[in-house]
Image 1 (tube, helix red, strand yellow):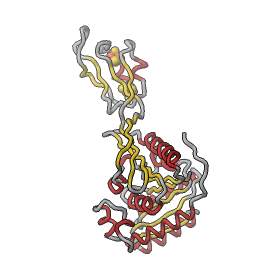
Image 2 (image 1 turned 60 degrees about the horizontal axis):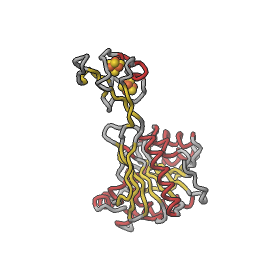
Image 3 (image 1 turned 90 degrees about the horizontal axis):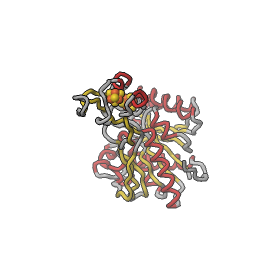
Image 4 (image 1 turned 90 degrees about the vertical axis):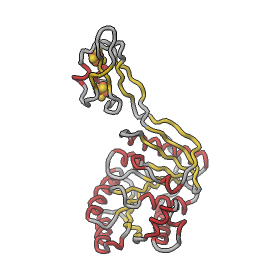
Length: 304
Ligand code: SF4
Ligand code: SF4
């Protein structure tokens, strides 16, 4: 089982278009959309959901109005300003305290200080995750609830479920649309992966983003490759990015030209390689050939 993760320093670099095309070209692969904060692989691959599950990233406090004496201690100790004095009254006090479940981080401090044992904890519903079938193979994806942030945990869950699907269906490759940036979700996307492809654009921020992302992959000891999307918008910066990448031990394996066909394909709900043979589609085919050559031989499956 091999895991290829496609990431970028920031959103909007064309990463998902590339993943969708890789899915079409690879055929025997499981897909995982780990960009859970802005999941959009489903827009191209039109998944048919076969399994739907709740995701709980932790617990949230709830004050039981019948037990609360309105002493205010919980409000005083909550560092997240999640406690409000607007709960319903009981036989002893006119108003009680209430926890806002969106602001609550589930740290448990209020419960520790409450002399009345009036705080209980219940698992929060932070979103949903799905196993689906697509025209290019099975896919695991997720949707975070509004204002939910526990995405590192959800990313790990999506990756692990993708491995289980791969084992069940006898697939030995997972193609992962990773989270952008360098925070917890991207670390959860790449840790333990076999190969990372970084997608960047020829802009000054692209150079900076690539530098940060490759420092991260190096830190985790993961082989990384880079490709430049819309390279012809600035050929000079493209060369500079490729030179910098090589200097830091990252192989530059592809250039994808700017092509309106990419947007046309998205509008039609297709991967660009399904939409056309030429232009950016030809570049992505070439890129896939370079990337797949560098994937290691299949290794034993580890499911956490
Ligand atoms: S600490 Fe307990 S009793 Fe005091 S206001 Fe908070 S929930 Fe109510
Ligand atoms: S669990 Fe922590 S964050 Fe939530 S209300 Fe209590 S003190 Fe505040």
